[in-house]
Each structure stands twice: as structure tokens, then as C-alpha cells.
Image (cartoon, rainbow, N blue to C red; front, side, top):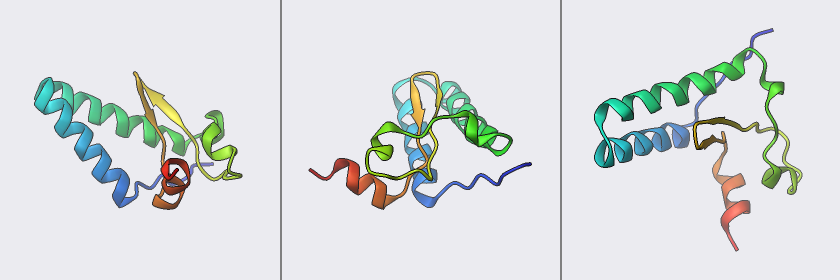
Length: 90
């Protein structure tokens, strides 16, 4: 079974900001490479999303509809504003 992977507007903005940061502080080629690999990593969840873990921070809040995967030192955490509010508002 193949699943649909959707990027929220917030995720798209985050990817754009990551790209811009790498482009500014490293190079355009590396920024393009990282962006391509992050998108590829996210799209790989379409074939078998259960192979990756739920983020521990969200599990602690009882939230189980998100998965987390990694590319290099970057964590890719599809999220929404509500989950972020729970995690970072202290």
C-alpha cells in the first residue's frame, strides 16, 4: 500500500528557511542538495511510514499521528502549530 505524504505550509516554509540558511552560510549547491534529500526522505514515508518512530516528545503528550525520520544531522518532524505549542510553550 502506498500512502500520500503531504507537506504543510509550515513545513514548506521551514524547508525554504533551511535552504536559505545553508545557501547563505555554505553554498547554493549544498543548499540544493540538502533540500532535495530532505524532500526525498519525507517522500520515502509513502511506501512504509511505520518503519520510523513516533517522536518521544509527542508520545509523552499522547500524540501518535506523527512520525520522525532523519537525514544527516537533521531531524524531519512533520508537525503542526498545535503540537509545537505543546512542546515549546513553557
